[in-house]
Length: 319
Image (cartoon, rainbow, N blue to C red; front, side, top):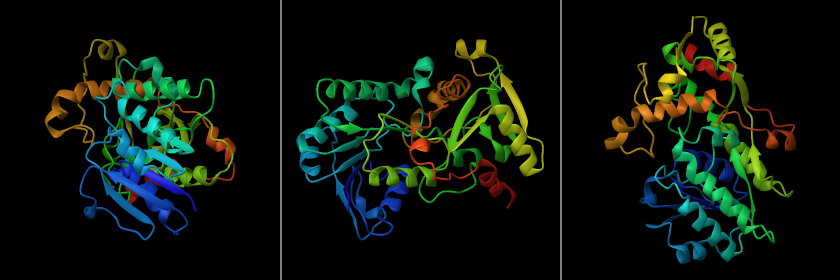
């Protein structure tokens, strides 16, 4: 039985992972959140703790006592220095935690080439640098950057296909029979992975006694925009349009295409309109320029793992 602490345990992805970890009572999970935990799922081997300030290092050290693995699911686009992720890593070391998964859960190393358009990921880079520095002279903490690309279920938004994870609009809007991409990037690869597979993968990684890879890419489905359009058209039996935007417009901060509002827990409702253009430029650029084309370290390590296929998932739009 592994003792696991989940920071930000009330987030949608965290809840999906928690459900997988405690489903057969083989692992104990301590879920840490800021909100009243009575409103969240309750399970036999799941304990909730409410902590108002995750930056309270002494409090986190106390909570991490006797914990084997810390998983961080806090997404704060304003934390460009990665202060919270660093605090949790330091607290984990002080408490004697063996393994730590910082808050990644999406982009791969290619994000560095387009970080100016995805600035909300800058904090993740700073946390990685901090972890590397911690282990420079002596390995004090085993860690893995879990990077599964975008959530597969996003492409069928708003059809409900997850248990806890809220879906949202991304440039692949199959329920609208529409895909939007940057002109010239139609053959650029990207990765989409089911939330259920992410949860399963995290459990298998925790149960794997081999040292974790620092970069933990996991590939559910690797596609290009053109391939996705072709497959969706075939499976759904209707034409999926491909609308192209110009790089020159994005570079000048202009979004000359109608896009729906993106609702995400990390974006306060009052800020959505102001963030709209910047967010869509970031999403389009991330797909076009390799930020979502993650590696496959976990696929290689777990060759028997069979992820959900994209063509199977999108059949929910036929119901």
